[in-house]
Length: 322
Image (spheres, one colour):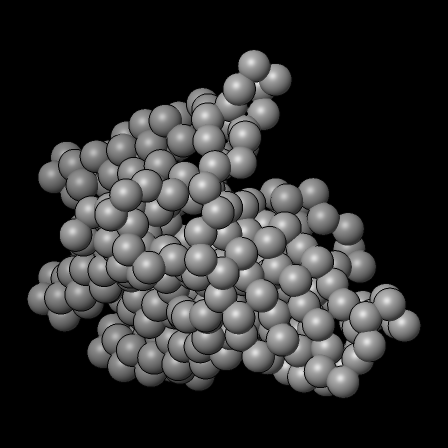
């Protein structure tokens, strides 16, 4: 489907100022019967501020003809809306709550620190060092998450402020930094990892719904009854709620590792953390095909899944063989 947006500024005279009028065509693919209500957002820049009357006219696209390009099908009923200009960074599509992600991340970090301090005290570890390690890891993890995202998407350094974040980069930076602090303080690394695991997964379970509300890491459009309407900041449609599924995975692992820390002491310190992280990574590999974002390589996902499965099996069997 192609949607033509034509905007006229209230009070502007057509033909006098080119910035008093705009026309934009947005094409949306993959719409299937049963998708439910759909919203399409067009972001238009370099226009005069004020109140605008925008007419959106959708046209269905027939299958490609002899030329190999889609041909216009029937024109549907247009919709007219009145809206106002605003600062570009504040423009978001329907269903997008941009401040939900940083808020939930902050809540998740606070939850992780509290849980870790309680478990560290229970295990006889230095709680002060545990707090320092967690906070230092969170700060470094934020920057490494952005750096990982920029490298993965080949973005220039000048786009650092507006760049996205990647959970893999956060985990590498956060735990790498925290382990350096813990090792320098003479705290047993393996024991600390087991203590840190519940808080880390509970934090991810808290933060992932922020991705759902913020319009990132979205799932593929679906007609399934289990689909949930959400937006990728451009197209709002019923989708597979991959962010919420991943949050449920993290919550399950957080609860399991917390129960293990409270009732059981691993024969090999650190194996609880390794097993939980391997299970989480394996679960993410199974979720990737359900996400709208295409993967960069075809072999990366199955190889990662196989490797994490082997690590998970090794972590589960090592205490038995020890």
